[in-house]
Length: 72
Image 1 (spheres, rainbow, N blue to C red):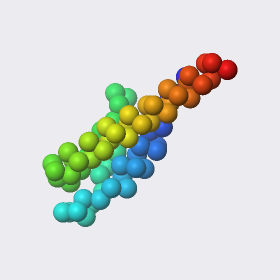
Image 2: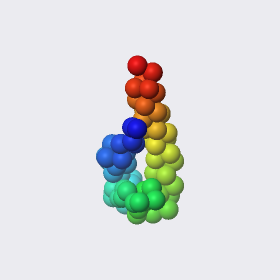
Image 3: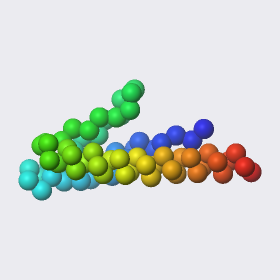
Image 4: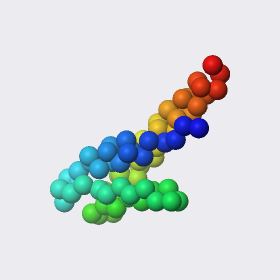
């Protein structure tokens, strides 16, 4: 079974920069999923929305890989 590439998600998230505080968020994978730490609530909300989109894309890629292998 294909897995979600959390390293790719981490790189994309930690690349972002808070325009107010000039800091990057911190992405940590946990046994229950992941955790994102940011410098302020506004930036946290923005990063969470972006993470939802990125995770949806990564999930889609993992499913497509799984299905392509299943129907060979």
